[in-house]
Image (cartoon, rainbow, N blue to C red; front, top):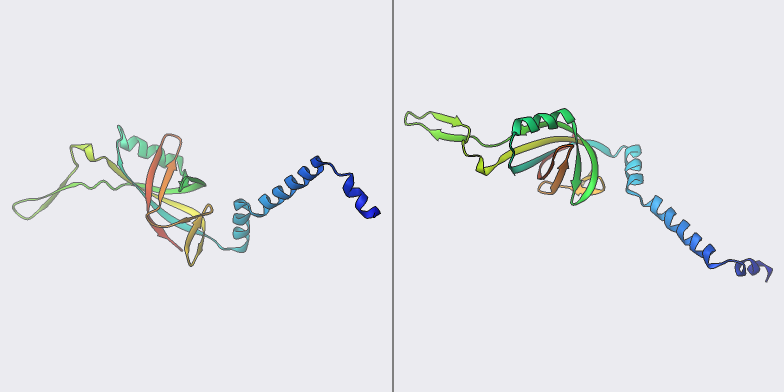
Length: 169
């Protein structure tokens, strides 16, 4: 009987504090950052190469923007509207197809398109630490596969592209 007397002295505020403490503990245990820290410690994190293609960009000064992106050296990546962190930028390449014409003598001549209405196409090569398992690559708590739309953000830009390649070591 005396053992249960202390329960009668508890107020609803004490109960609410206990519930909040339990929720905080659950949040720490199921935290994605904790899962990533455990993955790093266990060695399941690997360096993964990711290619992202961004197509149909309408840019006033494409070369100036590409140089600015290269100088920045890293980009923020958002996968399926979930921020996944900052990744290292290896290179940025213009993949806009040139205009090709076959000449009467059989030669093929390439030229830049004078009409830029189709836009500018760019490939970002990125390097990220991710978990690689049998079902694919997990980056920032989200599965990353070829064809997944991603957002790349930097100081001067925000582009939406598509993952076009993943290379595992």
